[in-house]
Image (cartoon, rainbow, N blue to C red; front, side, top):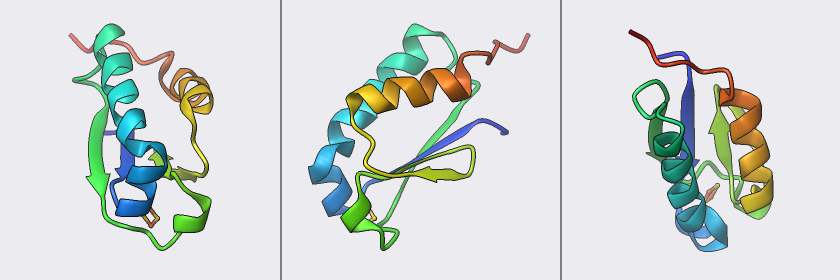
Length: 85
Ligand code: FES
């Protein structure tokens, strides 16, 4: 799958905001009907806790992702994703 989101579910990132970020990602994917087109997985601590919460989009790791940044990232990476027939 070429479109992927990997959310760090380590305790630090989870406490710093990835709990809420996960909900926001799921809501975004379902609202835009692209949940089947974007792979969503969690990962363990990546050793970048001090820069968290961390989320990887299409292989690129982003740091300090808050809810506003997250929406911008989702739009940047996935606004053009279309539902495959
Ligand atoms: S908990 Fe996310 S990098 Fe450590």
